[in-house]
Image 1 (cartoon, rainbow, N blue to C red):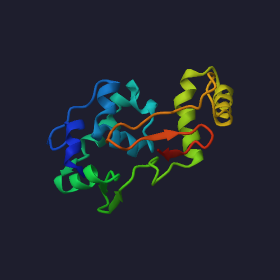
Image 2 (tube, rainbow, N blue to C red):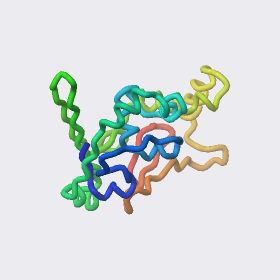
Image 3 (cartoon, one colour):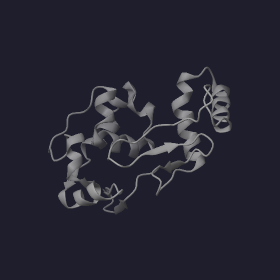
Image 4 (cartoon, helix red, strand yellow):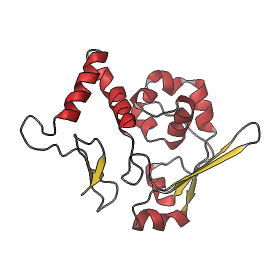
Length: 181
């Protein structure tokens, strides 16, 4: 996995030849190798992938140990001067086959928006543990999509991305799609 070298500050495992498995939710959410390993095995990286079962799963830990981060200084200017977040991923399979992927914009960015179905699936995964039952998730999702204003009568602002100065996004409840301000 190749990424801008400036990201090393948020991924102190980058460039190390050894890897210490994360022991807590906080450590795991900030561990590139763990996130890639669990994502490859589970097909997604949501809240439940950071539970005790996953943190101790030998298959996740074995795959995470085989993830090799490659910080690339040449990608720094792209990250620092554009709205791109370039990443290259190369998989080497036991069969000898190799698969490569280059991404300039992560899924969910305005240039690579998530589908409504993807957003709803993510909402369901995050909201389900906090709500009483499966029916509650659907009702909460319907209410959020139909109601553009909070209980105070003002429009929802949603989250703001603070990773890079000048890039601010908001999620509108009606469209469930990121928009730029």
